Length: 178
Image (cartoon, rainbow, N blue to C red; front, side, top):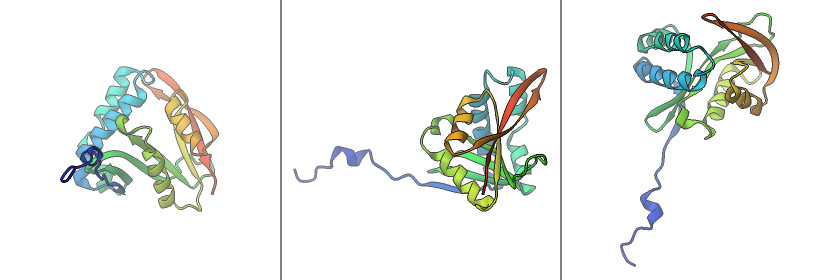
């Protein structure tokens, strides 16, 4: 058949997946990713009013200020869409002997299960320095996050708790040695 296009050619397209530093103009979309990811991850774990308060305070202005202030913030893009972000730097827990820390690593829910979180984690780890050790904290009842970090080779190294309003929730630190 001359001039016929195979059916699969109609549906196959190339999408670029990239990881890049955040820019000030990304702030509104980062805020939207944050809102979607946090509501998905923490609904039912963090009390509703407290979760909503936490999400609301992280609007575009908050992210612009973080970017302008030099926060290390990498974005994972899927085509033109910001699919996720990671915020990272030096380890803040002095009691733990790790060099770096990923403070936040989140994807929009529709991008879960595609290997993109792993790709973002590995890039951030390289940026922190592969010779450095790394720690990440997750709520103990956040089974998705705990499974994700264990699958990446993270080993539980500490426990703590955090208050969300009147509710105290346990959290787990996962560590990676150099």
